Image (cartoon, rainbow, N blue to C red):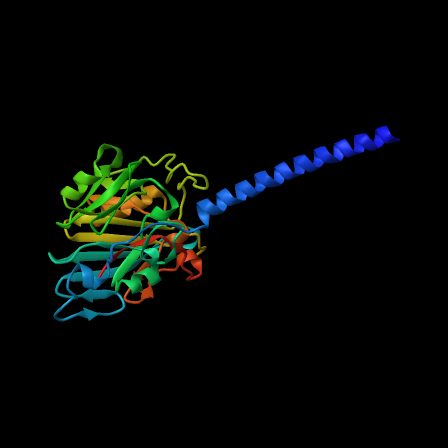
Length: 311
């Protein structure tokens, strides 16, 4: 009997140790997931990018309606475009943006903080910065890599992929982060960089091979092939941009676009440079106080890290 009790105690002790070890492993995994996706990690407070600290407020006559805006330095025209029918129907929005010499494309962070898992809706960030037009950015807060320059300030210098750069002279260029120096980019007049991809149009050439494209290799990311909601930005010429947002995953309203279809849209618009940004449920276009498209198919915005905007 004593021998049997000893065996049982030994087994129970072993089970207890194994159970405790499993619970510790589960707890560690849950913490890592929370740290990766949920816990705010502030790296820096963004340099103030509110209108009063960048340039003067728009002066002169301002004209606008639900789809158009015109001031002395900014002209914006938005079109809703519908193609196809039934299950093949696609609905997307194109903002044609022309900027004068005193204007530029800006970026803003959620809560005006730089870091991981710090998020707000596109419209909230846009309102906080008096944006006339805004789209979601590259969701930089999901990653720890890339060259992150925003409004002329370098926040992150960890080259990883092909990115898009915006310059003070109104131009936009695609560049390889791994072959670039952040300091040199700043010296050349880069004001903003966006690190997501893929490239859609480069030096006037339409890209067509999007096989096995991924945003990055971090846990939780997946291929962005197939038809999905999309967000992208392109340049027709310096100071003349097109912001495009595609709705998707909504039967009989919009199936979304493939990357090849999305690239073709920019080429047809005359863009010589075009870059894909964060899409899916993040895809949002904001104009004059309202959300223009139908994010998430329910008119509900996903909270994101950053926006690209014009004011």
